[in-house]
Length: 121
Image 1 (cartoon, rainbow, N blue to C red):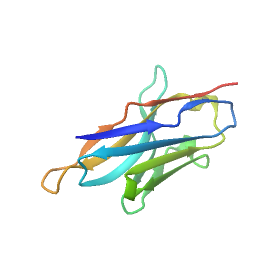
Image 2: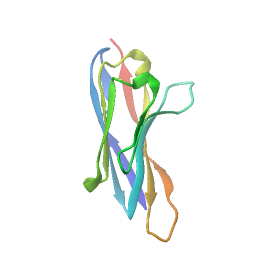
Image 3: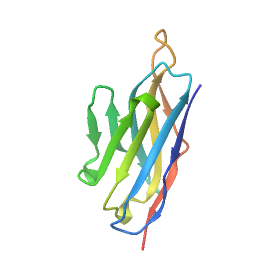
Image 4: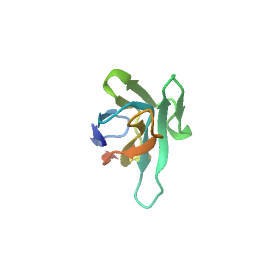
């Protein structure tokens, strides 16, 4: 099937930057939406940013102006550039993609395994 592999998480000081990457591989006919979600300890998973084929982009209010999502369609990869990081950005970040295996079947959601981002001095 389809797998999402994330990379780029780690420990960074407040005000610092990180860049997350997520590459999709497997039996892919098309990918409509790709995006990032995050889950902090004791909280529900929340949307960070998504990008849809055709160029539509959506950000959570808490990251607008600091995070930038981008996508390489040729390589089925999505990136999240995170600047001016704050301690409240600390969470496990998950990649998500809406994938179709063929034109005959409906799309379905795939999740990555998650990558830890910790913002602390």
